[in-house]
Length: 596
Image (cartoon, rainbow, N blue to C red):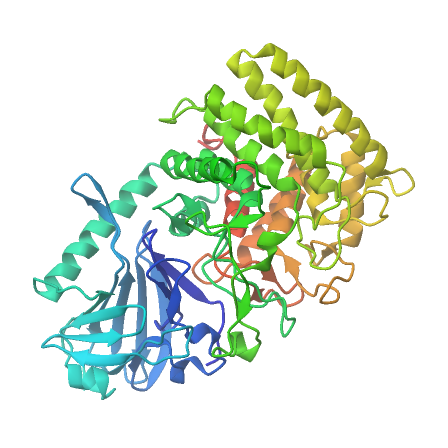
């Protein structure tokens, strides 16, 4: 079986793992979301069943499998049936629950296997790797555990399975429940079975309670809940950062070379993510993310803001390729780090202001915005004024050219526009008047330079004559009213040039890697929202349902999809795509009053 993105996600906001349709753990970074992939089978280029860097429970004569999440949780159940009627149930989760007045989220994965029909014959294949697949760790044994020792850290697997059967990969008859607890080199001081059951019960209760507190739409409830839980799993709670995806180097299209490391936090994503969290009522996660961004701004001092940062706030993300991993289906390169951190992307200043605006208007937050925060944001506003008409790499992070990109200009305007709102909120009318003058001047200049009268559309960069999908956000960020004929004209041209089989490409012009081959998932959600804002709700709902049908079997999406086949491509799970599900469902759903 070759690698695919038919994967489930487990995690606890410290670590995460990807489990394939047969219950094999094929991706786990430790000791945190951006760490060394101890399980890296997703990128080994081999058939998953035989790959190093996996944790599999192979059922003899396996014939079929089905998967589901326990309702409203991040606990994944896989049931594998053999050809003779026997079956094994595999439960995978990362413990997360309240303990001693705080959230317990250890660097730990728990796997429970049990027979659910007859007595299946299974083989456990526990094959961790270290140093991005380059090293096989040394093994030392205790009475009920095995240590896997690497240069950087040691893992301990505690289990009630025969260690001989585990290490020699010998088949055995599964007559009762067996448990695996993987974590740091720390002893388990109670029965591993009772510990796993206790952690399972507590984790189940945590997620059910968390889900119960969500504000969800009437329509598409299950879809939104799954997206919300997965978005939460992509949070690094220690700092509040939300990563773009859990993986690196899953290509955007087959053999395209568009392989990037997405285990970092893009400031550009922050406004739309915070908007989704706000709509869900996930205020604690939202507030932590706002605090992460505020800390980035404070730490930057007078230095330019970067497009992305590490999950701890680290600014340096040097990019290199890894020779020890062939890549997804052998389609390397595998990259660690992301060189985009050195790019000039002027939209980030506006994105930071938009994201921070929530703190000034949301009375639910424990730490509301104040004049000190406003002063910091004004420094970002000055950068917006200085840079809105300057060339940059743009939202799509072109690596070899710069232009005055319309989206960057508009986001700079939007940042200044939001400073006006904040100043009014704080009663600083002189500052509000100052920023309003700047916003009006910027708006007029952008319209003069980016509007193409002959095309009847805004263009992706000033005077370019081409469009990209970021123009779908002109109404979303308030630059144009939805009923402005210029917005309708831009939407129509995008529909003609960028939409294929109902899916939206970010652009169709060639870049450093040629012409894009696959649609960019979030862009289709932008298109759906734009249609809805123009009153084309039936068309928007039809496209939304079509997008939902392209989720994998567990309701998740990656970054890209093939417009002809619907196959998922790109890093996974893509938080921007999850945000797209949430925001579009909230926009399109009937109200509870309408529906009941």
